[in-house]
Image (cartoon, rainbow, N blue to C red; front, side):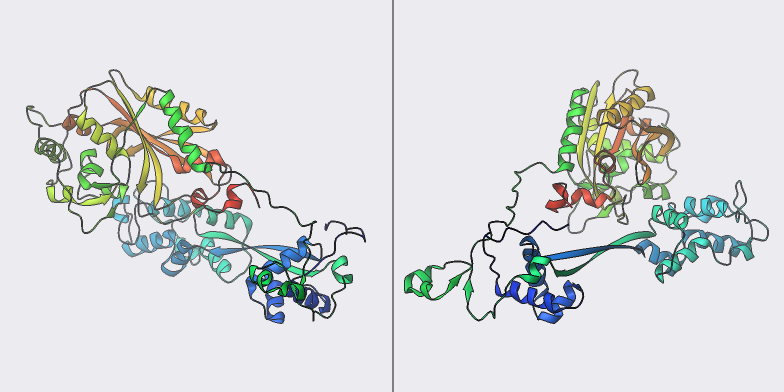
Length: 504
């Protein structure tokens, strides 16, 4: 609702040439016009139209009707799914081509990566197209039922602008295949005061500011100056404040310091050795894909101390360490290549910082943490980004167990006001046993943010560590989404001041 008009004896209103032109056009129009229609009719630039209409609104001379609309659009992943087939379609085709049951190892790779396979299995079982148990086999008669999957129909409908059932759109949005595109249309018309304001013929020039040259040559006597509109709102100037995400990171660091942890730092540019090898991730094995990395060209990496390199190589190859008679395990049953260890990469995890600390100071007790940026070549969506902040922590002393690790997860979650936490078993190449902690986002559901476990002997012994070490890598960026109520990970890196100030 527009504010009431000023009294008749209030200050006079004066318009710039552009404002007058806009108001004249709106008064002559038979219906409200959009900003694009006003620009086309008046010949003014879009920016001039937008600014002029807002100024007229602040003078109570125009009113605006805003219409908000939403529509479903395909994400890049959704477009790829229609182009090359959704994971469930590719799994169907793979099993049909084989003509027999197959296990996960045979189905992964090629057209289906390790992340897509569980999704495809879950969808096909919900659709009763895949038999229970392993090896995986199609249900009898599934060929006709799978002619077109509901997910495929829904994606095609969204692409063509047709309606999609709410339950289907909700599922496809959670999978990152659909997104909601929001738009606002503004239609402008003159207010009651703008309709009766005398505009004159516009022949007498008016200026809004007194320029120095007018004073020097005396020409200020020959022009009219527009009066100030004392009713115009004064902009509120807000003082500086910390970015909400940076403030959250500082709060989390203070929480760890209060729990007795000291901070460590490490380089963003790492080698494969510190990023992967020392953490017992095999060099030539699908398990390496747990942490895909960005390779770096034009830089030559350096190998660590020879004694450490030989110890890590022995753990990988299943050989006894120097001075021992028994191997730590069977290893990865493949030769260790130092040239792979030398490759420079952007670190994919801050666990490399913990490894460097343990290699330099292996004597317990120690409580260390690192908050830093990590990089992975993920597809960017509401939950994933190619760069993110991670909090690595290690706790090493006699008697350390999973009890301390789970208790640490509970303390960290409660310390930032999160009460809903679920812990379940998991797998990581460098910890055993391993767990994952999940917290619930109000819009995105349960998200994995607290992975951790006890470092394996294959990690600790080559570093000279003789006590159990609990380690974790908190996904701080996702945790901040829950704590700050953010629905898209990209909003945490937003530079929009209105959004940061809590405005519209």
